[in-house]
Amino acid sequence: MPGIATQWLGNALAMPSVSAIATWTSVGAGSVIFLAGLQSIPADLEEAARIDGAGRFNVIRFVTIPLMTPIIFFQLILGLISGLQAFIFPMLIYGGGVGSGINAQPIPQSINLYMINTFMQIFTKQRFGYGAALIWMLFIVVLGVTGVLFFTSRYWVFSDNDTRQNKK
Image (cartoon, rainbow, N blue to C red; front, side, top):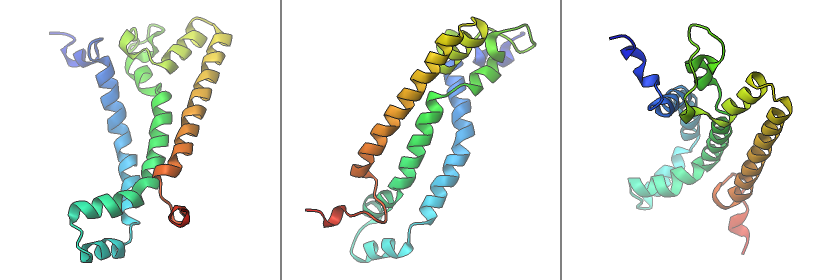
């Protein structure tokens, strides 16, 4: 039966397929960053917590996670920005939806993401001003959400020079 090998790229499973591919390709870099963060936690602090009577769960909750919050914050910012700029995988899988190349097929409506729409507005419909406005709106949204994350980080991200303990 022809076409069975690529049925997972159909309209019904387009977004899960693109999400699975994007997750698969980004897990490696995130794992390396998290591993580096975990290796930077001093073993003395975990040992001191165990001596004080903390169990495995409490060591993770009160020592490991607070010391990992800068790494979690960094990964959150990177994930947010890359998620809002998702463009590569739908275009690679569906061939851009333009032209008559061997891989060109119409892009399913379920993965008509923001950057795909911007690309289509600029390069297919020749609406350059509208496409530029869409890109500026994306920049403003990314800047705003990143600003909110940076503002709220003072409440949940702990660092070496944290002075919150001394404030009353």
